Length: 272
Length: 113
Image (cartoon, rainbow over the protein chains, first blue to last red):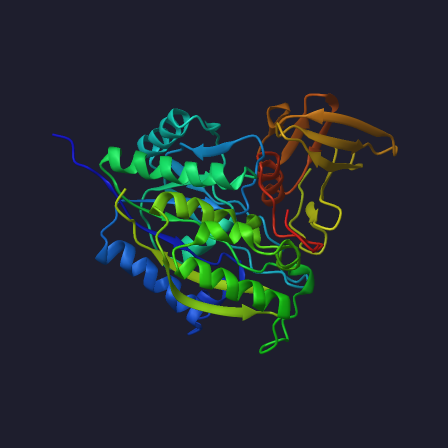
């Protein structure tokens, strides 16, 4: 008899490379502590046996991609010190889950979506949050891609179906930032935050916590352009599809370095 | 030819203002080549301007399969005369870029990508 799998939880988390430095330095900042707490929850409470991670820096245009590799090695894709805003060099290696990866591809194809296999590894958008969480579970690395929002929602649904059919107890991690104006960043700005960024973040938080993540598509376009959310907000559409439009629980939020909205949400999976 | 990891002179950078990735490497003679990734098309093919050590620009439209990477070298099928050495850290960064990665920008712009 086959065991029915479950998408246990989905998470929207920050992915800035600075998080690895904070964690390495033993920071007590909420943004780090919450990520580390999520790692403990995934392994010890949820007892997940796989993680699907959708990097907001893996942004092809022609389709959604899934890395079916048995091992995922990180590659460095952020600026290194001593450049302004440069960070220390980090690496990370995680086991893959080729069977689950292939199941995701099959489910996406069955949904009529352009989903294909590609050897990629993990960029910092994937490995940074997982490294800070401290999780060592088999992982499937997938792209966010520059596809229409509604395709992202359908891809999320297909992922959930594949997980349920696979027998895996899996977690979806779709990192991203709300406001993401790196051109305005100012490391000395501890309290100040770009006003349009704050307005945008507040609106997104209001919608996501109300179970209306897909309505962020209706946010005023001028405000959207001013905030320039990471990956154009697609991680939240992916999660909406996977979680059945579940409301997000806001675990932490900060407007950082004047320019970036660091929010962490957890989502249950609603009955289909 | 051994390329060194010099963070002050990265072998691959992303300019989010121009939406252009630029790789640089040296051939066996130590001469520098530049690859400017100027556009990613809807089918994920990329328009690349390759500037050889003489300053001549070769404009090609290629896919990720047209690149061959080793630990420290990069080749491009459309330009067999090009074989450049880069530090392994940047070879991997470039390989990721050809496969759809948009890195944290070295030159920030108002949106990413």
